[in-house]
Length: 115
Image (cartoon, rainbow, N blue to C red; front, side):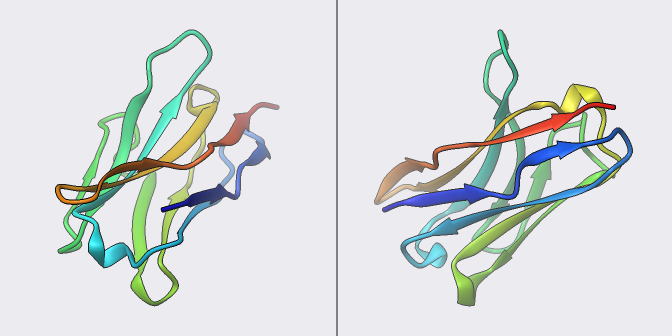
């Protein structure tokens, strides 16, 4: 299983980005698809998750600004990030988790929020 994260870049504070996580296998095979991020010198942290049943969960720091969604037909999960702040700067990773198949990681995409 391969995960391809894309959509990162440099954006000014207050701006928006949409990250995509394309999965090489049907995403309905996974219990959840999760976005994590890791800033330099920091531990990797959960940003947002979406379950097979479309239940979503967000870190408190991104609630109201980020939205996770999925397109099962395209085997892709998105992370819409609005009102970006400098503290959102990190490498963003997607993870596909299955109790049967295990867990798989994408390669990460850099998000930099700076003026």
